[in-house]
Amino acid sequence: MREFGIIFKQAFLSKAKTKSFVITTAIMIAAIFLFANISKIIDTVQTLTGSGDSEQVLYVKDDSGELVDRLSAQLSDVKVELTNEPKETILDKVKSEEIDSLLTVSVNQQGIINAEYTTMSLMDFAIPMQIQEALQSIQTEMKADELSLTGEQVQTLFTPIEFEQTNVSPSAKSEDELNQARVLVYVLMFVIYLSVIMYSSMIAMDVANEKSSRVMEILISSVSPVKHMFAKVLGIGLLGIVQIVIYGLAGFIALKTSATEVPGGFSDFFSFSDLNIGTLIYAAVFFLLGYFLYATLAALLGSLVSRAEDVQQMIMPMTLLIVAAFIIAATGLGNPEIGYLQYASYFPFFAPLVMFLRVGMLDLPMWEPLLSIAIMLVTIFVLGWFGARVYKGGVLMYGPSRSLKDIKKAIQLGKE
Image (tube, rainbow, N blue to C red):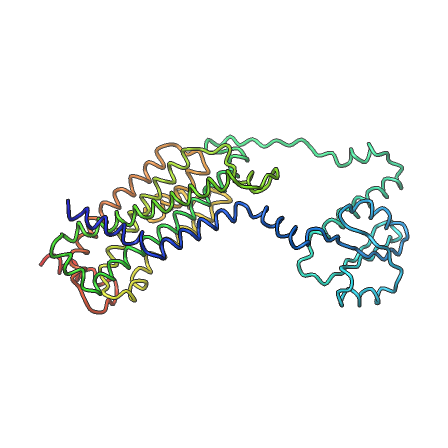
């Protein structure tokens, strides 16, 4: 047990003390705080540069002679200037960026407003939308006057119907709960996906580096390969848990101290006021199970190569499994009741993401996630037993690794 503890501690501390780990963690924490306060930062930059104080000027050529005043009253944030210059002259000024934009408006014989907006800006979306809404409102007023309708009568034309949707499915959630669950599930899915890829690859790379430096021969002479493998898996797993906890605390503090106070904004979107603690518990369970499943597989594959350059090629099938699981789970964000998701959630290599998606967005009967967890536990046990046999011989194999056929050779070598 002492040898196990030494390797476990070495696997954890050797990675935790590296500059890359510290720098990456610091950058991610800074990015979390930056993202949480992005609205305040943008407002501050606009204040300092003065860009937020500049008023948009809209030049209007009104062929009808009756729309400019109404349009000016509708557009409170835009200064409207009437121009009587020829259209070609104004267009030349727009192209030379002497003026921001030109709006040409007219009313046809049927009393319909025709408008043409011209600008040089590729990212000019907000102003045209405001203009379109304003002209639509003016159009409504003109038609109301034409039909001699009062203001109250016009309002009745746009009164929304009362529509209530009821879902009697036993797994259904309310729309608010579903939207909030969708955001949380997507974030946690992404965390599980990236963590499993990163830390599993780290294990395979660490084993390959020890083999290439011949350190493995010394380690195996004093500790069994099985203890060495599981010490690696648990040590780097603990490192991953610590890093994720740090990110989680940073995210929580960033949201609580965020300067964004606009209702319906960023802070409301990620407030999780109705957060289901069960979802977080399932996230932790599926993260741990997914990590141990793929980490054991990564250790097995890493033991087959003796050069760090061959690691990525050897773990490519494992990586494709994780990517496929994420893609399948992502397709269910819009509709988590798709049939193939139910079957995929019981496949052990897809279950960490797909079953978590389903249990996070649907009210499933308890037996479904428990069955998926049981299948994963059995798979981890079998993979650990098989992986230990391969690892025992694989760590003693040197030379170029050609393919997964080397697994048979590693098992035979481990028996000797």
